[in-house]
Image 1 (cartoon, rainbow, N blue to C red):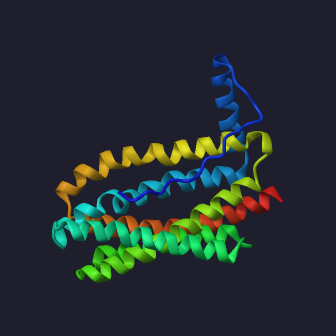
Image 2: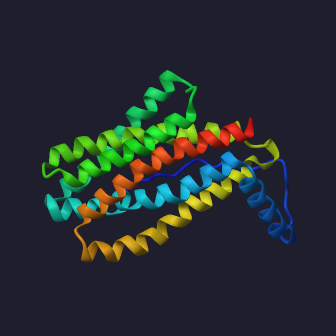
Image 3: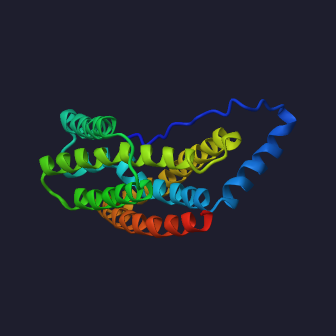
Length: 220
């Protein structure tokens, strides 16, 4: 399946003894939830990664069922996604920082949703691959904007712990979502699952823009 991993920055300012782990974990969660913007980002992570799961892990199965199970088709599905991610990363390296990072994240989430919806609707394989490539472009934009937004709104002493929590959330919800969407894919056409999740993802991008905007006002 496609990878949506974000980078984790370890906290090198603190060393923990085993018996301190529970206390540190509680402080980390409390710090994150007490910060309106970090709380919004955490909720965004949990929901958006659930909605991304069908396109990330069920798209090869959708390709096999709707376009054919030839190896070259499944390979092309992964190559076009990777090509889009590389193009997006190259543009960011050339462009540099983005002023409104919340808007970049919101547009990326909405872009994912719209493209995933179109991928579920199309019956032409080459159109599917083109959309797959475009979807890949959004990934480095979202990850870069999220990483910088978290860095600029987190106390340095909690930096590594907050990133660890978000990594736990993002990677924790996906297996649970797979347990749900996997069996559902045997009962419902996978295209419909991806279309519905895509529409919800687009709406979620709008929610994030508004919620993060309110959180930034509270923090200022």
